[in-house]
Every structure is written in C-alpha cells, then in structure tokens.
Length: 259
Length: 328
Image (cartoon, rainbow over the protein chains, first blue to last red):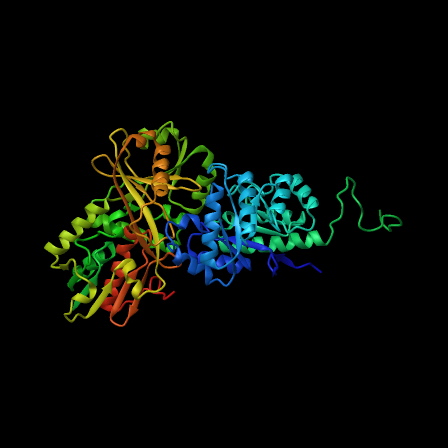
C-alpha cells in the first residue's frame, strides 16, 4: 500500500505536476493536463505581468482546468523580485503555495541558492508554503528546511535541457539524507524513462514542462510520463532485486531431464 | 445583395475583396482612421505555411497554401523562401524544428553563403524552405484598400463604430479582431511586440528565423534597408505597453543573428494584441445574419484570404466549410 502524496497538508493521487508554459495552444495544454491526470499545475506570473491584471485571460483558462495551481517565480533574479512575484501570485490565485525559483543567470538558469534560501525564509515567515527549486546540494537543502520549507524540489538537470538525471548519485544521497521530506524532481527531464528512474530512486513526485510542451505530440507525451511515474513508483515500493554479476537460473538446474 | 463588413484589418479587407469580386455590394465600417491600423499594421507578413507547422495545427498549412496563392495572384510577393538558423549550441532546436515541419532542405555553409552572403561564416547549417514567401503588410493593405475603394466600388466608413451604420443589409461579416470579444467570449489576446530597424550594413533577401529556447525571433527584410524584427508572444492584454524586456530580447536576438543590427537605427517600436481562440485556429461563426471571422492569431496574412473566400462562398451560396466552422 502506497503512502499518500501529501504536500503542505493536501493529498493528491497523481504524483505528476505539469508546467503550463510553451504549449502550442491553450487547447493542447488543457488536453495534456487531462492526459497526464495531474492535479497540480504551475503557472508563471512574471513574464505575463507588467500590470496588475494583465495576464487575466490566460489565468482564467488555467483556473478552468479544476486542478490546484502552484504559482511560480520563474525568471526572477533577485530576492526582492521573487518575493514581490510571490505576493502578487497569492493575490491572483488565492493560494499560499509558491514555487520559488531564483535564477542566477538567464544562460544557465541555475538556481541562485544563496538568494533562494533568503527568499524562502522571508516567504515562509510571511505565511507562504514554499516549494523551493534547488540543486542536489545537501547543505543548501538543510538551510531551506531550516528556513521553513517543508519540501524540496531538486533539479534533474538544467531547465529545459531534457537530459534526465545528471547526478543520480547526488540525488540518491539526497533522498537518503532527508528520508521524511517530500521531494519532487523539478526540471531537466526529457523522456518518460527519466521520470521512471527518479521515482525508482524514491522521489515523491515529478514536475515537468518543456518535455511535454515541446514534444511532437504533447498530449501523448503527458500520458507517457503519467505511466512512467506510476511504473517508477511501483518499482520503488516493490523493492527491486539487487543487480549481480552472474546469471541466476529462475528454475532449478539440478535433476533436469534433458541437457 | 448588400453586406457590411466590420473592421478594415487584414480579415475585413480580404473579406471585402472576396465579396466584391462576386458582385456583392460591400460597405466597410472601421473605428480607426484608416485601413489595417491594428494588428495587421504590426505583422511580419511572412507567408510561411510550413515553418508555422512547428507549433500550428495542419489546418494552418492548408489555409496558408491557399492564401499564398491569393497573394501571388493579386499583389507583389517576394518569393525567396525562408531560412531557419540556430546558434551552434541550439542545434537541438533546429533538429526539433525539422521534425515538426516539411518542404525544406538542410543547407550547409556554402549554400548559406549563396542564399544570404551576409550570414555566411555565422551559421554552418540551416533549414531552407524554398517554397515560402513574404510581403510588406503595410504596402499590401494600402494597395488592397485602394483597389477596393477605386476599382471594386467598396464604400469605406472610417472613424465609424459598428453600431453607427444604420442602413439595412443582408449580411454582416464581423472582422473586428479582439474588439469582437463583446460577442465572442472565448477570444483571448496574445500580445506581440515588434520593432523596425534600419541599416545598410547588412542585406537579407528573405525572412530569417533564428531559433532559441527562450527568444525565437524572425527578421523580415523590407524596402529601404528596413528590417522588421518580431515578435514576442505574451499572455497579456495591455496593447499599448511595450516592455523594455521585450525590446531588449528582440534586439539581442537580432544582434546575435548579425552584429550589424546592433548599430542599426530603431525606426519604430510597436505592439498590439492578436485575437486567438483556445486552439489557436481561426473560425467562421454564424450568429443570426452575422458571420464572425476571427481568431487568426499570428496567421493574419497567412490565413485571412482563405478564410475570406470561405466566408464569401458561404454568404453567396450557403456553402458550409466544416474545417473552419466548428463552434469550439
């Protein structure tokens, strides 16, 4: 029996979270959400902002999907920018949830972990439930938890790179270091097999965007990821056999009638 | 038969053309002071039915091929194709683009040098869509409006709201773009920002698209050393607001394509709102004796003539076109 997938007190059936950017159209996005069976979507505010209610039409489309909305601070480069965006998101979407991204530069899109920890502390004290996008660095993770985050979102690989898990060793260590903290792999996945591997490592969930949005058939890819995440989760729970060097016959060799 | 067309953007103008061509009496009401001053004014004017397949549904290709023929038959179209390039680090985007589209050939450095000498040694591989074309939207809409008024007996009422014209007509064709949101509640604005640069230091014969994971950009050459650089795609309804970031991104991308654009003169910055339905496909929608032609999104010049022909045939003969007459 699987334990529930619980994020800040809310429980979900699906362990897949979907980003809403870069789809060919809102219609394809809506169909991808349905095919993925996800119950949480992330929405970027900053790029669409530039005025208090300027992105209203797109946000209405998202609200119509009947899924939980996790606003994000994608594209923010500083503590102040991220905090302001989070506050605006709370007002627009009526949620304390915030996926906190503070990017060090536009080229690598690496998290600026110093600013991340600082912003996480400010937001947590302000009543936000923070989903921090971080690396697999253990000391940063520790500081995020101390700052008030109750879950972690380490990257698989740089945003949009589609490379899968760049550092499976680091991610395995991180899982072992924080066994009771919900952890979601966020960013860098390309193929469903990447998600299956992350789930087999014991991660609690997966957040995707580009891998689905930019696929030739986003709806089918969303379905593929949903299957892979279920498969990987089952594989993790079922306790896979240990690999070994020699073959092990699955039927007894001794006393065979024909050799 | 008499038909009133609402809106003199690219949709209204092509609709008036198709109706008048069939001998139907047409009057056009436009709230602005002249033809094609909304979205149509800021368009790139690329006739690129195959490049657009990267993110568009196959219907856009069908409509685009038909529209391209319309422009060829009636106006000046530059038939030099489209060149699609990417920085070496973005080669995966070029491969992805090639898998989503067709009617292109991979070209090497030597061929790039033949096609666009100024881009040689900047890119070593590209996709060349030889069958595509482009036009100057401002030139073409001015010619179209002139021909409608002076050769095809179409009456224009500028600075005139839709409700202001009272005379009885058999049909109305509503081509108001985003202004038709009062009737089409599922229309949504997708903002685009563009700029015009002038430089004599570089010459291009055809639209060049540069792929980039964050900021894809296209540059369309026009007369007098003018280059149109476009266009951002933002979920935002503030038409007049041009963001520093949007402009920076466009200029950055142009500069990355060729440093000469860094020295170019900025001739104009523009922004407007594209009208889009949720699937980004255009539609004809019937409401009583009003036919709405809308949702052209970023495919105004590529889609309008094909939609306009269908609208005119529906009004003249009742022909139904299921591919563009779906409700949702």
